[in-house]
Image 1: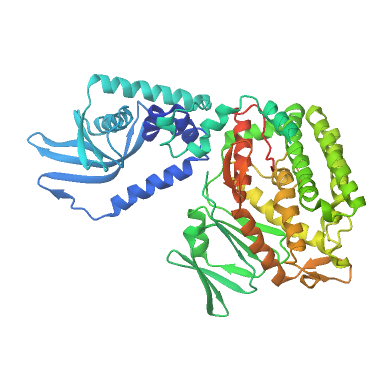
Image 2: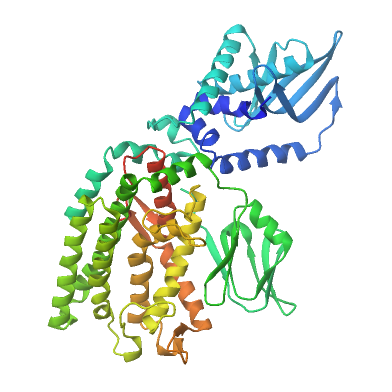
Length: 209
Length: 346
């Protein structure tokens, strides 16, 4: 079995935000460094903070490695809470986001993928998870319904195909997304879009002077 | 774009560099001489007998600070870098493209078009700023070289043979360096330019140029590695073991602005004088150790200056331009741009 074709769960979220961003990070990789280190650092700062392992019937595990052998996805959950119930412990994945709730479903898909892994690993269904948004300081409950599960499966397939093809989609500048993207300076959507033909540009420049 | 941070050049013989928290500390003979926060740094360059502690090297590797070791004269010895670069797909594309004569020539055309344009710009500046002070024959020679570079620049874009392209580069170098001495406005025979010489440089101007070229090459190399390209496999410069051919390719566009122009201003503004150079018995001329520091400071300051990048149409610090160009080359190789847009100094 080849371990390398596991899709990182974070890639699903990147893909739904922007397929090119996903390719820059997961296909070209050379620029994943800044994003990953930043993410890792934030994650560590939180994971390193002492927190009680158990309180009021909730056991909390941070930085928990997850994988789904059939879907071939893997990742690390920020936090998994285990709630004590009459039937035993029930897992609830919790993902921390710096920003605020979004109009797209990338965060939900990421959480859902974590839930799918937990289901496969623990052997019980996980109906709900939480997204915690730093900006609003609110938890948003996410129901893992059929629609979200289908969207997650579909995204896994799309990402796997893109990574296998090793192609980076062309840049399309969209102010709302691009201006908020940390990779904008590496992706250069405006520059790449502006100059359709570099030779024409160069010839013009040389003769202007 | 990555933030332009400082490069720390350590030229003190016998310096011991160590990590203290988030700071880099330089000890000399057991005494602390300098202390600098490391988040300000993108590179650490050690000249000659300089040592660094394992803890410091580890921290640099983790934080993307490249560490280079050079001989006291600035010849490259070794470089340490953390696990940042290494996009195998991009590198394969680079190898395929350099192996294909047609694709390779297309990149070389643009590299050279940029180089000739920028060489011409150096002469153009002198003509514009100092025309009235120039002797008529010097003015005529400069004007002639300017026109010659324009003509060679026109030829280069249609030319697909690599040999012919290299020939044009030679012609341009002749035209440019043939009048380079006219750009020097101090009346000291020691500071005249007597034609390009290197290994060893045979006059002060060449010593200064060679030193600056090493600095720019070093920055080009970092830029390429940051973009995930292999600095050893070039388009214009062919593979030779140990030679950073692609860094030398990229250097071509920057020489006029980042080295030649800087050398001229250091001499013309009398920031360097004949006392800054020493002549060896062999006739080789070297920049003195203390003077190297002045040049390094001037180089770092020059990199902080801003100019408008003709292709990305944004104001950028000069020090970032090699990184932008490396990235544009990578974007061309990955298919985002149909050709490589050279850096044009306007």
